[in-house]
Length: 145
Image (cartoon, rainbow, N blue to C red; front, top):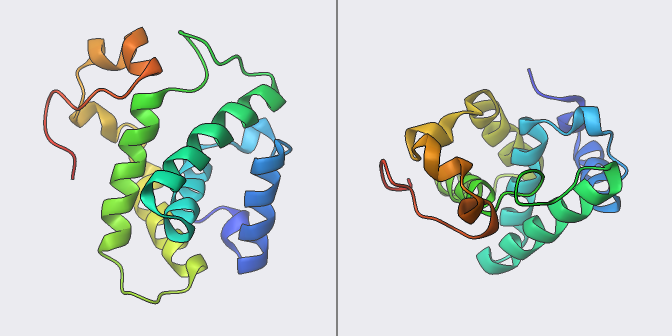
């Protein structure tokens, strides 16, 4: 079942704007919400811009809801870029020209339940490192899709 923000194109737009303003409820900032934002940014922007929007967006959102971005909490560069790569790979498999809401629904339906997917690509010590939180580290268990 998809979250309510995927009910219509309008609800998806409202959700994305709420995230960007930092007013989306912290309790609703789920893995599905992360995947939806990543999907929207990758659909709407070239890769580098999507990455920049995601980086800035998560950091800003965290600040707005009281989550500290530090070496031990908040924004995590490696996990963020991992999920952008996974979402991008999934979006490539979808039919060209699919409406944004349909594409985001499909990606969220598939990837939201796979919150721990990164564990297939990264050993525990890599993901838990301060270095991985600060900067991109390539997977050490298997290559990105």
